[in-house]
Image (cartoon, rainbow, N blue to C red; front, side, top):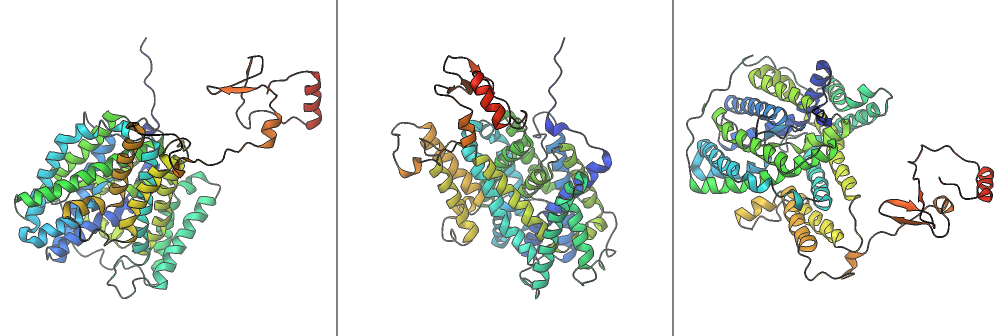
Length: 505
């Protein structure tokens, strides 16, 4: 008889209405991030507002298709994890440089297609590095993902547009913190459904509060077409420039590194088994989406780190919830009027929700790092150095300004720089053991070990602990009962037991 297939936590199916609600929450969480690249690149290319609107619709449409591929999956493509896909912000600076260098938007599209095709060919290399991502590496990277996103939340909370006269005003920041407070209050209520939808509900409530204050403008929702299908190569056929392709290939390496980290991060949060094959499927989905993306006037695709935080905070592990979010993105791309409704949500409201979301990602990384063994090894310095290097471009964005473009492209991302340093140091200290010595530096020291007094009272002289089991002096195994599953015994009764002979817990 064939053994039943093990049910994975990410395969849970929720009611359709619930899935749509949680999927919409994912869309609202990443909406600001997915429309930012086309806004920036379109402005650099000198496009009109109508053309930039076309770019935004295209990015929503392609991001939705890429999310469906990643979550549903087909043979060899798709990690089948709750990962939301969208335009990668890692390539924005490079694409702007290509545009300003005279190549135009057509050279950007050509470079994206060719570099993604090369990335697709090399994914087997990335899919086999899972053994170089132990908790000391993944924990550092996950923590850095959260920390590097905090400036994004801060920018949103201040209004999102640094040139606006009210940027950083008390009104914007006050609305952001009010939204944050609503998230916390809704998370506190006893109703599980409300608690899980706290981010979405807080965004809705925050927007409703902003309307009478004049901080949300829905007047332009009706302007423009209701339905529009992205026209292939609407800006002309792509052109191919070798320097542009080389620059974008460096970005692809960054995207592969970040997506690997995101796959590992969401796998850790969900409790899913992530192996080399699954990472490879996820990376191939990224690259295939990026190859097709320019056909519909969009750019390089990658997993969105902020949505990893949403999975962590809501505890909703189902990949089909994110599938629903992908379908919503496709609809938004086909129905610009719906996109204009979502675009009317004040950035400061999204910033308030982003503070707790991105902070949750960092907290998830810290939880992973708490599982790392720090005694008699160099894991502490691996964490310290990787986080320190990763934070440099976050706290000082111009830190690598004078470095070569290929170097600054990689290390300007706090996520990729943390990953590079953590992987290299893990190999140096934990895989290349030649030259290592015990207690070779102060970083070997671990935190002091602590045992509660009441735990000691349950032991007797001669008890010993080996291989995860507790034994009495005579070699008899002592049963270890999980916390909270054993009835409380009064001190008098415990003393009586001790007088009558040994009693196992």
